[in-house]
Image (cartoon, rainbow, N blue to C red; front, side, top):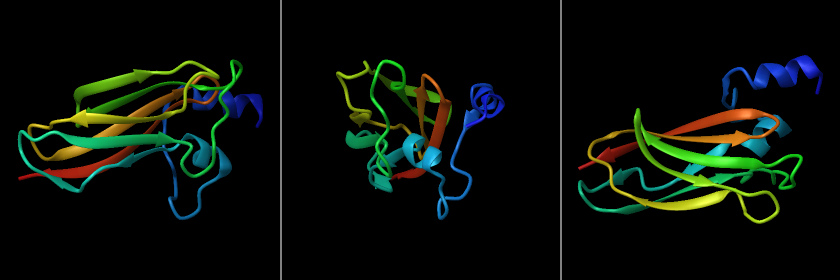
Length: 124
C-alpha cells in the first residue's frame, strides 16, 4: 500500500465500503459485532466483537490491534486493551443497554488506524 494511502487511514475513522465486496484490508480490520438484535431492558447480554473474523489480522509487535471499544450511540460501554503476541482481537462483553440504539465497535490497528462497525439493537 502506498505511504500516502496508509497516512490517509490514520487521519480518519475507517469502515467497510461495500460489505459484499470487501478488500483484504477491510476483511482484516472490520470489527464484527455479534449479539442479539433484540434484548430486554435491564438484562445483561453477551456482545462479541471480533476483529479478523473475515481474515486473520497479524498479531506481532510491528502490526497488531491495540484495543477494542464498544459504545451504544455515543455512550461509552467498555474497552479491551490488547498486547501483541499475547492476545487475540476478539472480546465478549456482558453489557446492559438502557435504550434501543446503535452499537458501535471501534478498534485501533497500530498501522492502519481506527476502524468502526455498527449494529442496531432494540430494547424491549
